[in-house]
Length: 169
Image 1 (cartoon, rainbow, N blue to C red):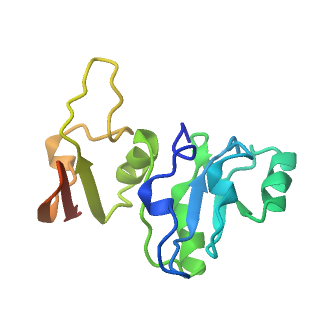
Image 2 (cartoon, rainbow, N blue to C red):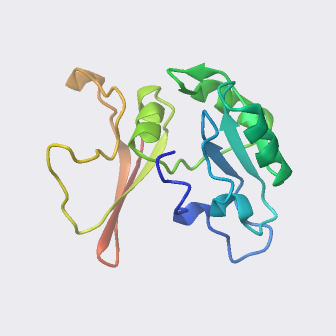
């Protein structure tokens, strides 16, 4: 989670059109989301589902449910919500597309398991760096160039001072 829930990214903010809000799915293996988090108090017709593991405290599960949200208790993998069972559950619930907005670890997990088929990278004209800087995508990565993800159908678009690069994998 590492702060993503505290400042909702654009895709989890409410749409201007009634009934068009996306289902919000929060990955939080131990259910550490603060009960005061804005994401749990949105006035929206779309649900918020919180994906957790058996490591989540039962009382916290009940507290989140009392706020009107569903807690999806899923298997864990390396201490995190196992992504493939999550995606299988979403498929059974007829979720046909998923926009993943997360920190480096979440994005890295999706890339490591080759669960990404389209990507959107936004670049701001700000250069950060340093030995201890956070990567955009963490995870295991690949050991050899031959194992790298190969992008196709690239598009590049300027959005004010920012640049959006999208493509298929």
